[in-house]
Amino acid sequence: MAALNDLVRAGKVRYLGASSMWAWQFAKMQHAAIVNGWTAFSAMQDQYSVLKREEERDMIPMCLDQGVGLTPYSPLAKGRAARPWGQQTPRSSSDAVAKAFDRDGDQPVVEAVEKIAEARGVSMAQVALAWVLSKPAVSCPIVGATKPHHLNDAVAAVDLALTDAETTALQEHYTAQDNYWW
Image (cartoon, rainbow, N blue to C red; front, side, top):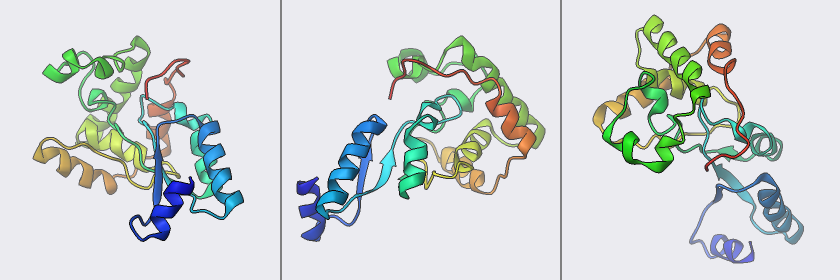
């Protein structure tokens, strides 16, 4: 934390962000910064999506408490929340991390995304991103666009307000994971 603070004081860095760790580790670093009068983190980058919500246990409440913005990566769950259940892409069939999003318990969540998207006449990606954007700690998700239409979906998701019933439908079948991949 002292080295990071030195970079801020030297004008080489404006803000500090951390990524993918346990909340207790993040708390220790924030505490060290505060106790020593150093620059604290203002952003946390963690995996967070309608299919990976483990950060809701500890990290997100801590970020909300400390005024730290969340910058989720993989908000579409490696694309799993952006296409119908069972549909594969070359990447999803070969990427070990993407395969972690093929748990049987995820199927009802993906089907809820698809149902809402069809009812609204929008893409599944827009629905899944709108869900992430609706969360209070989220500042800006990392969309990982690889095609032009991915950017269009991300922009459109900003204006897509989900109803309470839609949010409930997206969340009600989620099952927590004991061991999860960052």
